[in-house]
Length: 236
Image 1: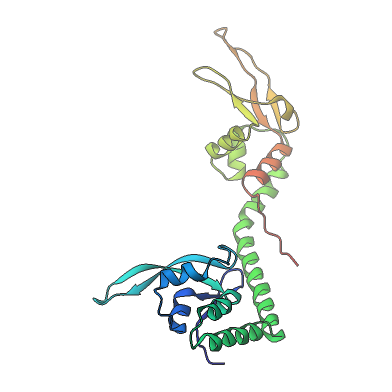
Image 2: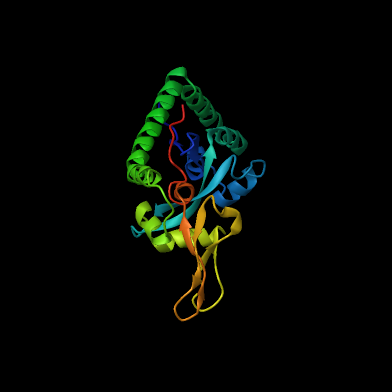
C-alpha cells in the first residue's frame, strides 16, 4: 500500500497522524488554525487528539517551532470527510485501509511479540540494577540483633542522611526538642522496628535519652519501603 500520509505509532501502540500533514495533503485552502477551529469542535482533546510542537524550515534556511496536533486515524478520516475537498474520499479510504492492515492477525501477533520482548529486556535491565540491592538485603536480613542508624545505613549501602530523612518524613521517628535533639522512635513502632538502648545519667549528672536501635525486622521493612520499593516482576 502506497503511503499517502505518514502514520506513526505512539508509546501506547496507537496510530497517529500529523494534523498539518493531513491539512496539506487534503489541499485545504483555509489557513491551518481556522481549519482546526472549524473541524476539531466535536472531538475530545487527550482522547482523539493531542497538542504537539514541531519544527519547520523557513525561507532563510533556519528552523522555527510551530504548533501541531497528533490525531487518531479514526479522527483523521472523519476530519478528511468534513473538510470536503477533492481528495477527502481518497484520504478517508486510505485511513480505512491502514486500519484494516494494522488490525490484521499477522501484525497484531507481531506487535504482541515485540511488546513481550521489550518487557523481557526491561525486566532483565531492571534485574541487573536491583541485584546489588537484593544481595545487600539478603546480607542484612541474615544479620541478627538491633543496630544503630549508622550501622544500618552502612549495611544497606545507603547514605545515613537519606535513611534518617526517610524515617523522619514518614513519621517513624522524630527529633526531640533542644539544641542537640536526639532521634527517637514513635512508640507504636517499638519493639517491632525499633528498640531503645537504656538511657541514664552521665558522670556530670546530665540525663540522656535512650539510644535508638533498628531491629532486623525494621531493617527489612525500611529497606524494602525506601530503597527497593519497585522490585520488578515479569508479568505473564
